[in-house]
Structures are given as C-alpha cells and as structure tokens.
Image 1 (cartoon, rainbow, N blue to C red):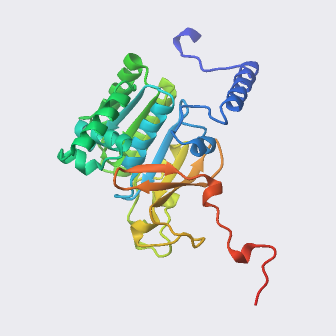
Image 2: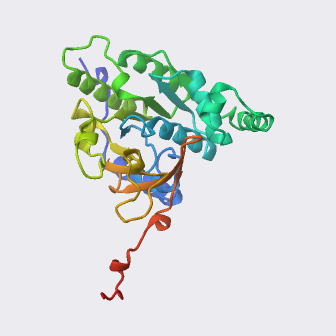
Image 3: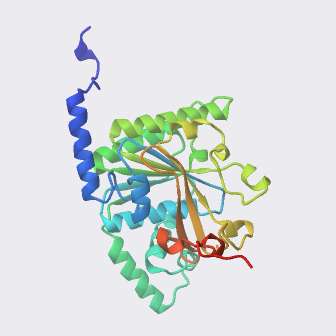
Length: 314
C-alpha cells in the first residue's frame, strides 16, 4: 500500500496563505461577498454569501415563511448574478414552485396564479415575468425521499448542470434508507452527510428546518433560539450558519422591542455564524406575493427619546 492509495488533503502553509490573501482581495472587491449572493445586500455582508463547502440552516415555525424566504433568495440572487442553483422540495411540486417564482416577480398574489383566475392585465404581467426569468439557471427536483437519493441527485446536478448552491425544503421530511429507532440519530446522520456533500462537491447547501413547539409554549416575545432546533443538537453543531425567521405579528404582537410597529416585518436572526457577526437582519414581508425585502439597518434604527443625550426628565 502506498500514499497514492489515499486521497490527499494535506496543504502547505504557503499555499494556505496564498489562498487566504486571494480571498481577502476578493472580499474587498465584492463588499465582503465571498460565495454566491443571498440576493440581499446587507445579508451578504453578514454571511459572506452562500459559500463553497458550507451548510446553512434557516429555521422557523410552520407558517412563518421559511419556504418563501428560500425562494426569494433563489430568484433575487439569480437575477442579480445568474449562478446555477437547484431547489429540492420534499413537500411541494413543480406547479407550486413555479407559481411562487411568477408571483414573486409579477407581484400578483400566489393564490390567484394557482387558481388561474387572472384578469387580462394580470395575464400580460405573468407573461412578462415568464419571459424575464425563463433563462435563469434554476433547476427543480421533487420525488426524493431519502438522504441517499438526495446525494445521488445533487451529485448529478453538480456534474451535469454545474450547480453551485442547493436549497433543500425541508430537513424534517428527509429520511434515511435504513432508519433507526432514534430519529435524533437519523437527523445526525443526515446533517453530517449534507456537510460532507457540501465539502466534497464544493457547493453551498441551504436547508430549511422546523423549530419545536417550545417556541410557542414559552412566554415573552417568542423569539427562537438555538435550543429550539427540532430533533437534534447536531443541527446546531454541524451547520456553518444558523438563522431563524421571526415575524412578531404571527404571535399577535404589534410592536418591536423598540416600540416601532412590526406589522409586515420580519427579522432573520443570525444565531450562529462561523464567518461573521451574530445579528438580526430586518425585512419587510408582503404576504400577497410572499416577498421579503431587506430593510437597511439605518432605516429601521429607532432612537427612543430616553436614549438621547440631551433628554431631560420632567
């Protein structure tokens, strides 16, 4: 047996330094962006984009909008700079996905498109959107049930289509071919397999995940935290980044903690980030066509009168 029998991942210090300096140069030229854009300018500065070899988890309770956010990222990123992407749904079919894309671009309600009850003007707008997005390098895959099937499909997509980012919706619907009695162990296997796949194929993987009901049973503002990740601590451990989508109005709240109205707004809470800071990225949310728009930090900063230096009590 010789050294040629084993794949080599050994790299010299000089090569590592060269790679890092190239990366720093690239970041400087792209406003901190290293990987594929998330589709959102400020989110790119926080996460550095969706990077090769990384696994990003976006968690939320059902109905919060995690599928909508994934589709927003796909479309906005592709329009910004076309990069081959694959969206894998374990829940919804092709019609649902394409309706979401058309709704997002045309601003026509998704339900209207799904039902086909369009006015003549809306039909014109739908055709415009279809023409605009038809050549974007976005692929869709359904009818996958196990992690083993997923690995085969993603590998083929990378080879045949040069896919650079894969979106998976969602973790709790992925099964193992030979499931164990303990679901937590299965999730652990799935997460490690996804991380290894991202590294091996040099792609970014983004996966949505449901959060446990503990979010809704506790008091306070019900902001999610890492301990709310459902079924396994390995989700937090293996992921390079973990973000939680949070809309206060979902729980009946009318204001943010700073007393500003929260209707039609959401926070993407960056709870783990190996490549940058932990902070909240605020969005507006248009439920009619399921669009998330980034709100610049300077636009949502609110200074309470009590915080001002020249404030004088009664």
